[in-house]
Image 1 (tube, rainbow, N blue to C red):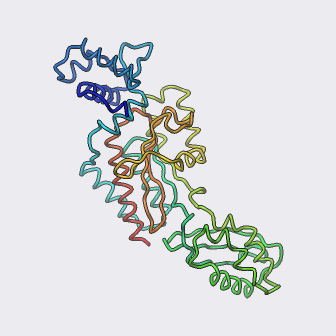
Image 2: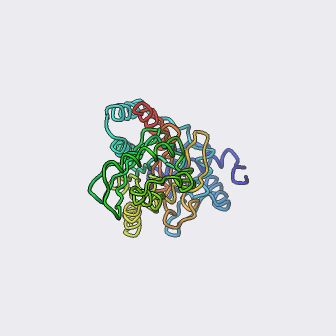
Image 3: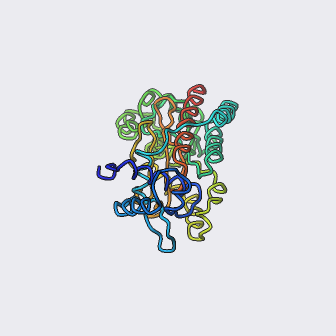
Length: 348
């Protein structure tokens, strides 16, 4: 690609501009680079190189400043070519290890804790989605009678996750009917993927002929999409709004409002996390600004990685201003995702 055909001095200056902008949040001028970094170039030569980088769309020149700031394209070249290899220091690893391994509780609580650790470590907004159940394999269905017309359906999958849903029945239900239906459904559906169940359940249970149990079977058929759907669409954990709001970018009232709206509307976040994303060598995705193709995210970068629970995958990551320490944050996302995978695998 054309943007990667940079001379050594262009790479060095683009890297220094981005490093300084990440550090100060202020546009970077040629004199600043000349003083901070020993490039063997005069401010005038540096200014010429910066002008060339601006012409190629890698830097931008705010009207109110003599300095320059990186563009989305400039950040993309930086993360793909110029940033230091992601590394997390031993102290940060120790904090992560102690916190994640010390929790012996439900999966949801572990995911909440993980999101807090990630946000506090990066000072960004942390996001964790529950594993996608589309390819989950049903282990067992349990039905619990709540009243004469209400039942609780407990769906367990092989990875260890459990989903519950309450159903209303338009007829009175007896315990012996529940036991009969529970046994029948497990015989017909256990071992199948959720996607298979949704598309074939009507055919698989059509031979059920106990008339007194028909109302429960009918409700099951009507509620198939709710029972055997993707739990990740219902549960996304977002943490660290106070951390991200400390960033200088959010002194602007409009940006402050925009991040609050994103935190309050999880569907928007899920939508962007589900999009196809450019993947780096370590299976990390980095979306920068307008690469999201969504105006709401034009001022942000999103760094994510999948974690695994058996055959199921969830997503963990951060969202924050494009002016972030990409190398450090990538390292944190990778390490925490890997540790979360290990811990959830142990708990299965």
